[in-house]
Length: 312
Image (cartoon, rainbow, N blue to C red; front, side):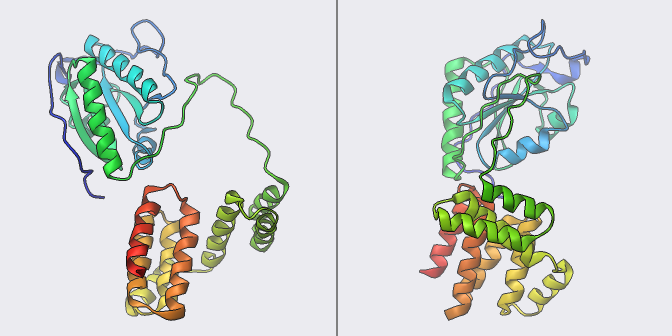
């Protein structure tokens, strides 16, 4: 994925503490003496295990990472200022706090030589912001640049709030409408025909049922790909680029495999070289796959623009 565009905030190292000079102490838990405050609604504590999920979430909304150390007072100050600003912005970005000493591989990935180090992550790409102590008003200005860069790259989603209390009992999931539950149960027992029928009935009763429409698209994808062989499908598509069925099959498999952009790019390219009924089949499949991924996903938004350009 290309590097996010937008102004690149300058680095500042005032108050930074060299990581190589620190011995690794036990990190006090958040909310305890010597530790950071308990996470707020838009603050998460991240370690090596949860870091991949954090990076993935940056395709939906901006992420700001503060690498800190319990030995650095500046870390606590910067983290507190960022947490306050994250609450003010109410989900326009998510703050991730990472103990650099406890997670040296992450610190190395960000090329952090000192703490605190603050880095934005947009669509999986790091954008260095600053190191060391930084006045709150200047932090606000830096964050405004990050939000502008995110918007320029189509990253406009909002982070979901969390309650910051890992010990709290999770709220029970809301019950599904009867037809949705019937479809879910059918998928669980691998009865895709019954799932399709349930979602179709839900749409007949409420044509605006977006969840039923998305569910129907997902079941269709499962049904189309259940007997496909990935290597055979790719070989057929490579052997005959004009074979629309082969290109559709590979796009379906790419969606299942998480190669969303590859799938969309493939079908947009086919749109540019087909006409009549074949072109309409490809257009309909693209729209169907947009439902599978979700209309708010930046990759869908970009692909919709590309599809419109290819069609008109």
